[in-house]
Image (cartoon, rainbow, N blue to C red):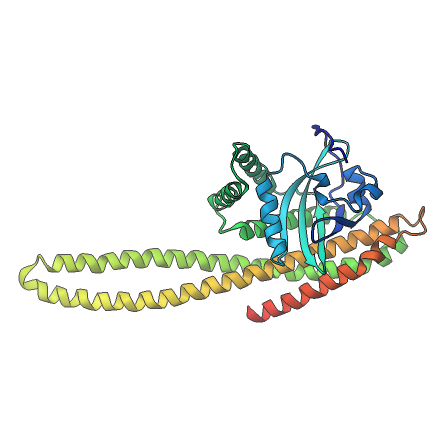
Amino acid sequence: MKRPVPTLSESPFGFDEFFFSTTDKRGVIRSGNDVFVRVSVYPKESMLGAPHSLIRHPDMPRAVFKEFWSFLNQGKPVGAYVKNLAGNGSYYWVYAFAFPIGDGFLSVRFKPSSEIFLAAQGLYREVLAFEQQDHSLEESHQYLLAKVREAGFLDYENFMLKAVLEELKARAAQAQDSDSRSEARETGKITAVTKSATRKLNEVFEKLRDFQGANQTLEDAMKNLDQGFQQLKFISINMKIAAAKFGDMAASLGVVSHEFSILSGTIEKHLSGLSGFVQELSGVTQKCVLRAAALNVQMLMVDFFVRESIAKLEFSENAFDEMLQNQKAFSDLFAQYCRNLEQEFSEL
């Protein structure tokens, strides 16, 4: 299939719309919902069986996809900002959240709107410019990770978590504004189930995010403690130096310096143990928050999928076919993430 020439036009879609697709292990498209087909501007029959790279935009750094596939091939979920190329040459940005499932992958995508999205676009331009200087893919990948760390993140997973949290926060704010819109009575009865589940999941998610904030405060406090302790060690060293200069006073000052040195060693040992605990706590917390964010995105997609199917009832007898075809994938994925989150809560 001939690649379209990129234009400056944007392929529009709503803030409340979700893309959904499944692929095999190689990234070949198996299914996709109506929004995915419409915004990609390709006939559905030509998309099914085609590689997902069909919609890859030349503005996207290859390094981002290397990192994306690295997570998936390790059996881990992954999120990223992605600029896609539609069949008519227009572009569209999404936040893509992909999950390994069965013998393939399931991907949910939605319109990004947070401030971190703007920063990500600037990062991508830098990495793309680096790639265009004839650097290898591995060099470009390392450059991407270095830029992520330079931006203040421990690693890509830390950046990914921050991004999805900010995007969900932005969506929640917009959802409150749109909740006042009335739905048809029968539609409302059906979607009330998914809305209720989404609200309950969001409550768990918000509490976890609050906990993560408290954990960050604990990490910052540990850094301050460590800095204070380093200054304390200098006091001990200076006392030893001073003891050597004070003649008769040297013995007394030397004893104090020695005791101070022993105390410093004891404090350092305790601080080291506490620091290790805080790091472990931080790692488990991050896993929990990421898992809850993934569940939240999955539930939002199911909620949209229901409403999308209901909207087709008037003109299609097979309105729910797409959803029925993929219900096992969603069900299995949701059950898996619930089990994992329960286990991670136990660790926490």
